[in-house]
Image 1: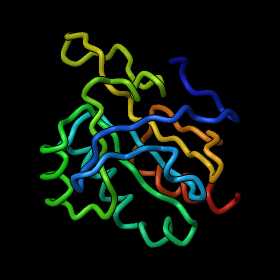
Image 2 (image 1 turned 90 degrees about the vertical axis):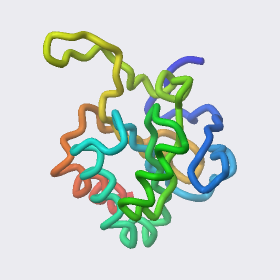
Image 3 (image 1 turned 90 degrees about the horizontal axis):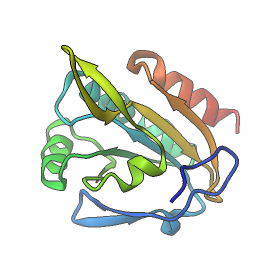
Length: 155
């Protein structure tokens, strides 16, 4: 599977989801979809990012937008993370890295001199027809929600 491109339809995919379900992209046409990729549940930046989406869920809902978080954590770990922080949206488990590769968010990272492949914090906006219309890569958590809401409002 090639990686997604701006102004192109996003290939259909399915991932295990919190809420004892699975998420299939093609089942959500008619809604804008925000997919945000983050490195790991229960880490400071990832928690703050989820909380920001949570705290603005009414604004996203008013803009006909579904929020989804994606990391390589298991559904069980996602369920605990979602419950602990009362996230009103689903978290998807991409343990096989299929969707991470589709969105090209896995990159070589360094931490304390150690190199590893990790998720680069990124957000993607898919329109009601399933077309990728905006992407934010190397996201800085603090100003991110305002940027996403501004883009959605301008549609």
